[in-house]
Amino acid sequence: MTQPAHPPVTTQQFKSKPVAAALALFAGALGAHRLYLGLRLWWLYPLCIPLFVMALQFRNWYQHPTFFVGMLPILIAMAEAIFLALTPDEKWDARFNPNSTRQSDNRWPPVLVAIAGLMIGTTLLMITLVLMFQTYFEAQGLSLG
Image (cartoon, rainbow, N blue to C red; front, side, top):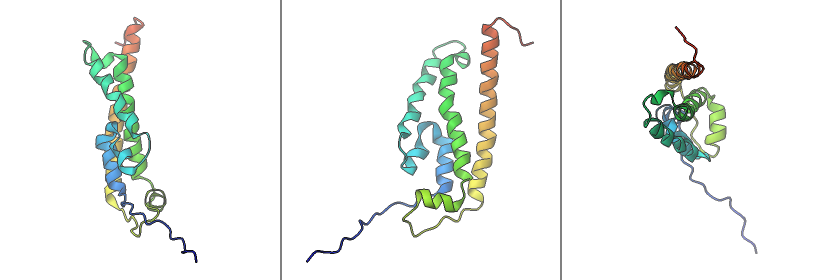
């Protein structure tokens, strides 16, 4: 007689959307949100941190190319914070909590994280673009003023 096959019992931890979005907002450059969600390639984000350290060696560190490459994971994390925060609860549960008996019922916390992500991300993006164009025009010998 063969025993009936039982599906393996998985004790998957419930993934909170506000927590994931806040991790992306405040520690996204370290890949904390991707590690929390169990996503692969989370370790790529911290690889860009040494670029900031390299850029600090120069006099105008904010105009060095390593600074601009180092800003990429920060800006990407801000966009991911907004994306995670604005994902509908049904899609969130289907992707990150498929076997959970709990269902997400998020109201204002993800919206507030998305607002903060928009404000901080837009500010950082504008600063990065201004510095990048200033560096480019100064390298070309053109004056902005």
